Length: 465
Image 1 (cartoon, rainbow, N blue to C red):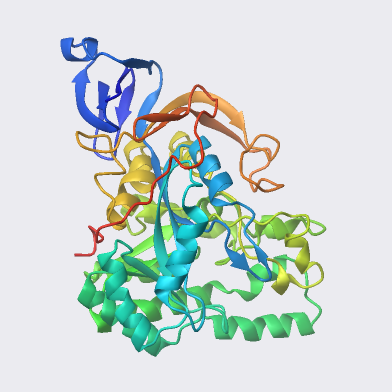
Image 2 (image 1 turned 135 degrees about the horizontal axis):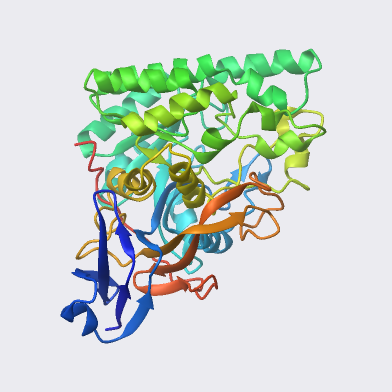
């Protein structure tokens, strides 16, 4: 059993900030001990000096799309490159989305994603299940997947002909989740109405990337959010709304929570730090920022930050789904509707949220809550993941809160040819990362390997009971 002690740092979790040494054995945290105590000093094995750093839990990114097929191409990060980049950014667990093909089974979709990921991941991983074909058979399969540790299911009110489920199908899936303990996640935009607006915009000759944001109206996000909330109430099921971007959608979630309903919301760094100003960058540069839900005008950001502070939004994930500008985003030159939807970000999340601490938007503990503990609780991984406590996996990051860095495609590790935050200066940087007690990043050097990461069967959501 390899023993390690991390000494001299400030341990920051969602609940505490304490100067303590972290004792690790067999890949797990054994104890937290006072600095310089006899037990810490006598802990034989590897010693890691954390003086001057925060010792934080590894990040849990509960929304990634590695190798995802979309619009005739694939997300440019594989499970190998994407999980390596995640580790560089202080994230030690991802929950990716397996996809049920139309006409196929949930099990076949899950098996296909296991095949992509197995033996290739630098960090631990789990899966949600995208349901694109809700029928009697797939509803029965939901029970089997829950038993096998895939306890969350994503349904779409967007992308007609690809992923969209109608209200009756969404209701049936929610009813099934109410009976088996699963958590339904929804992409909430009115896809049928959006398609009308897309068609009309193209007919008017409005073809640039900025029109992507203009046709995907905030009111259509709010309408779909309201609708899936009401459906979840009819079904008696909890609901998790992914990538919330519009203040009107935040208001719908807040209202439901005020009424006592188990409704939860996630937002992403791109909605907190970027805006329609990026979509409107000259030439075709705005294509880099095309994602759905879309970037919103800057005035929406205040509502998202407030939602994170008031806990109307509980989680910040990335929706990491990168497409290279050259050869992939360019598929939509002359027609914004053909630009692959998705942005890179798995490497940037922890640093951007620490910048939010520096800027006064969040406290340190809230940073860890929304990036580590809450996603782990939401998706049945806590306290194995998301905290530093006896018995937890030793997924630990040494984070220098004073180091400055400039985000750039020239220095990031994601397999994509641009950075959504090119030139942005932030304070704070990952120095060392342990996954189950094993170094993956050591003093800003990658020492991990594909295949270290293991699959995580998940329990039920700890918020949805």
